[in-house]
Structure formats: structure tokens, C-alpha cells
Length: 443
Image (spheres, helix red, strand yellow):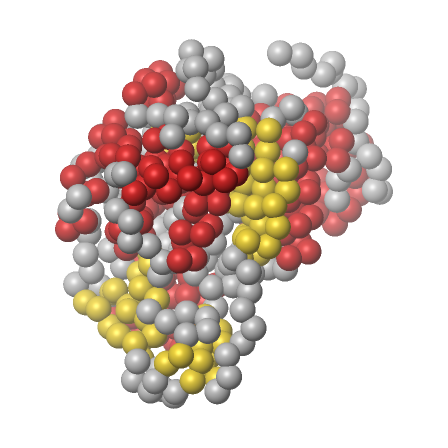
């Protein structure tokens, strides 16, 4: 692998150049990041550099250079022994965003190899790994050798970021998290793609969320991130499709770890909320098409629906769980999942139409019950969370259940109920509906 030549520019000069809105060279970026990984550049210097990027941005060439050097800071998985095309899917995060758990088995059932690095709960959004760990015995950290073995057998592996995959991203993200530099499009682009391209994939399907429950709350911000990701992937000769999807309200009805696994199992058995089906099937079809299993979106969509209706996707989910040490029986009997001791029914106080079902507040409510983390070392309660009965546009009568609250701790319940109260709004007339899929970009 070709590496840039060492650069004599000092860390201070790199910081000054970006502070003054200069464009950094590939060598300057590589030298700075390598110096940081070698403990030759201090945390406080990287923090200053990150803030300069946050305030002044990066050109597409700088973003490309940063992505490359972060990817190459560790190992790149060698999946050349797997004949099928390797396609991953990634979401920027949302509330009730469980699509990874259904699109991976659907795409794998259609012959696509899916090496998927998933994340933990972050802020008000849930984490795919935390959801999977609701399944007894599930191991999200297989060795590189085991990853290849699972892909050859089950066709998909759902794993966390390992120590040797894009370690620069892990170190830099820890600083971004405490220096108010998370919401930077170049830094987000490099963070996502350095991890994804370290998987040795042939293509990527991205779900960029927009709305109250997303890190990109506006469509314009989501579109800017989508364009940055497409441009960078194109420059790195990786096939990419980005869907910009709505996150104004939770996706599906379940918000929480075991509750979302249960909803995914229902999906794979043909029972699913319409919004979750629409977004998941669009993502799965793009994976199938990029994976070369269908030439058109129409044909890919047909394959995705058949994988569910014929039971092939549910069978594949069993295989994935078994291959990663989990109790595969959960796919046929969700009773194996953890269950909260109590269920509170939050009811409508007036009659009318639901005009707000705020994803962020509902995500925070679920977290306050124990479904997410406020600190890295917080222990998650896999059983708690929400089941949203009424969503945007639904007509309700006084006393109708808006939301089931699955809880174990009465102190946590009180805080959650306050947030749920703030999340819902009921008015005499329905609000204008929002599209589930706002745009599709391809590179």
C-alpha cells in the first residue's frame, strides 16, 4: 500500500494553516495523524486542529486524504477468499433505527456477503450492538479469522469495531466527543468511511437520517453529508448509494434493545409497521443490486420481499446468531428475550390528530429508562424501552394509549414520562405528512 512521504511540517504549522483556512496537503494530514498515533502530537494539539476543521471545513481533497490515512492507520480486512461481492450498510443513527438487523439477513439470503461494523448507543440514538447483546450469548467481537469463517457460512457478520480496524478514528472520535466537534461533515465522512473501507468491502449503502431524532436535523445538512460521502467513495473507487430518510419520529414502533429485536423478528416473519418496511426494503434492495444479484431496483426489491415471504431471511438470521454464539431460538420464540417487570400505558389527554411524535425526546425517554448510556461505563438495561402505539397523522380519542413504557426502575420512569409528555402533540387537524425517503444519491 502506498504511503505519503514523511513531511517536515510541524504539528503547530498544520494547526495554524487550517486555522487560517488554508488547504492541507495529503502529506501534511498523514504526518499529523501518524504523529498523533505515535504520541508525538498531543491531545490538545489535535483538539485545536479538530476545532479549526469544525469552524473552517475541509475541501473534498482534504476529506479524501483524512479518510485514507485513518483507514490505513490499522489493518484492512482481507476478504478476497469470499467470492460474493461484499456490501455493507450504515446508518448515521436514529431512534428505533433497527434496519441493520433486518437488511443484513435479507441481503445475505439473496447471496450478498455482508461484513457489517455496527456501533453502540450514542446520545439519544440506539446502538445495533447493544440490541444484539439482548440475545443471550451473542458475540459481537469475532476475530478476523472468525469473520471470514462466518461470512463464508452464514453470509453476514454483525460486529463491533476492533482494536486494529481504523484505530485513528477511535482515538480522534474520543476527542471530538468532548470538544464539541462531532457535527462536522468532513470529520463525520472520514470517521464513517475509514471504518467501512477497512472492512474490505466492494460497495456501501448509506442511510443518512434527517429530522429531530437525527444528528443532521435538517434536510440541507443531511444532503451536504450525503454528497460528501458520495464524493469521497467515488474518489476511492468504492460503489456507494446514499438514501436520505426521515427521522422526525421513531422508525417502526419499538424503541429500546430487546423490544427492537422483537420487532425485527416480527418483520422477518412478515409482520411489520409500514414505515419500517418501506425504508428497510429500499436499503436491502440497493444492497442486492450493488451486490450484483439483480440488475434493476425492481428485480432487487422482488428478491428482498421473496426472502422474507419464503422464510429465507428468518433462516439466515438464525444462522448469523448461531455463528456468533447466540441463542438462535429467539427467532422463533421472542420469549427468550429480556422482559421488563412493568408496563405503563401513556394515554392521550385530548381527542384529535397526532401532529408531533418527536423522535429525539422519545429516544431520550428510552435512554432515561436505562436503554442507553449517559457515560461510556453505564450499564444498559436491555429490557426497557418504549412501544409507540400512535404516530404522526393518527387520529386519537381521549384515553387512547399513545405509548407503552416498559420499565424496571420507578425513579427512571418519572423522568421518562416527562419526556414522553413533551414528545407528543395532539391538535384538531392533522399535520402535513413527510416522505420517508427524501432523496437517493449514487456514486
